[in-house]
Length: 234
Image (cartoon, rainbow, N blue to C red; front, side, top):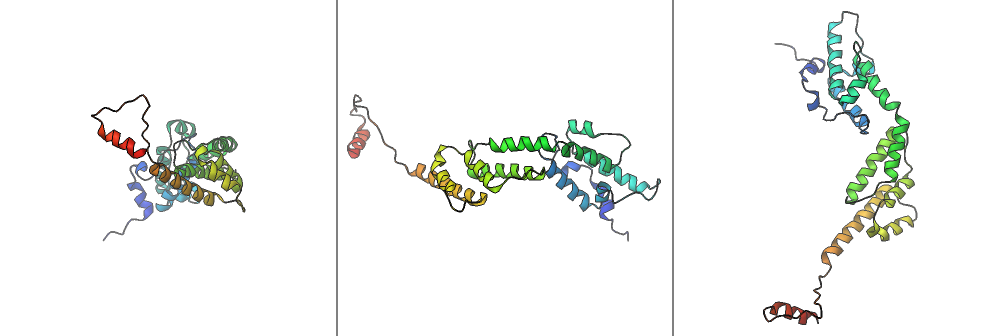
């Protein structure tokens, strides 16, 4: 009976990396941290993480098994890069770790620029047609990205950014939140906004509809239902 294959050997069964990592890395899409986490988790699962972090080295220049696995990991990296990023990261004769570091450096070296872009997007964000849930989720995503580039956002500032992007229908609850003592956290302010959003929806649904008849408009005998309605309203 043949011995079961180790995860290290099972790695060669991954013929399509996109079926395991459903995320393509773009240089300007702010998705590096998510891509990195997914890729490292995938490599850990198949016992090839050492090829990325440098802890797994060939025993000698003829270690064919190591070079085969390293080539596979390198193909995984290239297979999840957008075309522009692939071109800037590709270099012949390099190990998977070399390629990994080249990709990483393109994001880490651009950290300050990314922080400025993300901060500006956060400060200028407005709710638009989003629900409170969708709006706050977008804000939270930007905050997480800022934290990843070592530019964390103060909790009080975060709440103020959230309030500043709301429209006038939330004016009442905005004023309540701003004067609440102690000043609410992001999660508490979000809950207050969701309750107000729910209240406004119920108010809009229950608002009575009023039929307006212009003075010069005469009701014909063929419209008794409208005549009865007008009499009822009077």
